[in-house]
Image 1 (cartoon, rainbow, N blue to C red):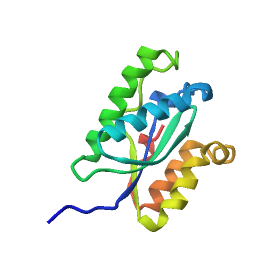
Image 2: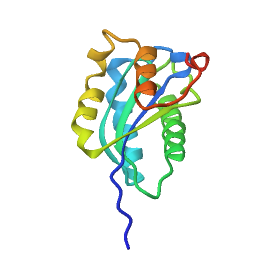
Image 3: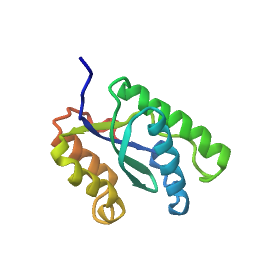
Image 4: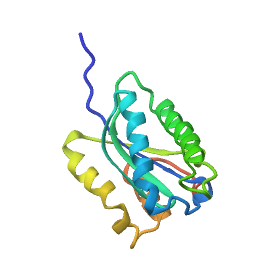
Length: 148
């Protein structure tokens, strides 16, 4: 029997210390680079977006790929690429952790809209408030002292 999955993930991670270094002018280049990483691992990218201190990725992960390894690979490869290309001069690294939340296929369009509208969304809500809301919405137990 073949393996069949349809698990949508929203993956979120931030720059180290949430420094606002991902300038708008070069974000699309970063997003295309990350898309290439996902594609090379047979993952389907539905939407990627972010603002100056964090990014959101809406994706389906190939069943042979472990989520933690995928995030590590994205962070390691993109950090090297950012440094080599010098597109974000003040970028040091990504934060050590990440958030990942699952969605049903029926929620795909809503999730894609949410990720696509990050710039507008963050005009009224901080990253921390957004992240806490997502953690609560998905029933994730957390200690606020570990949220920057």
